[in-house]
Length: 92
Image 1: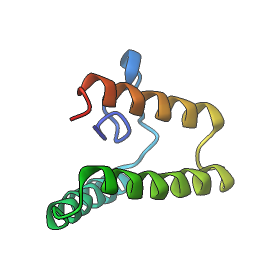
Image 2 (image 1 turned 90 degrees about the vertical axis):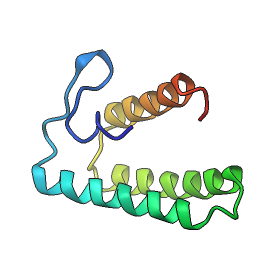
Image 3 (image 1 turned 180 degrees about the horizontal axis):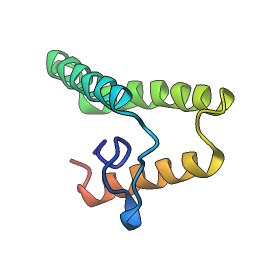
């Protein structure tokens, strides 16, 4: 899930130690907020939520790229990891 991005091991055993502890806590809290949001919107189908999150994620990634907070190679790795996580989970 978010562990590789939050400082755990990524694909190939890589770590992302550049994210400091305060940012890690903020990201973990935001992940909890998203979990709560999904739980309170169970009346929407998973497909509708996925499309909404995809649109939001695309905007966030564009902003990271425009602000130079994420390099093209980091963006590519992030997206590849996301695809792998989805495929490994069987889509669940």
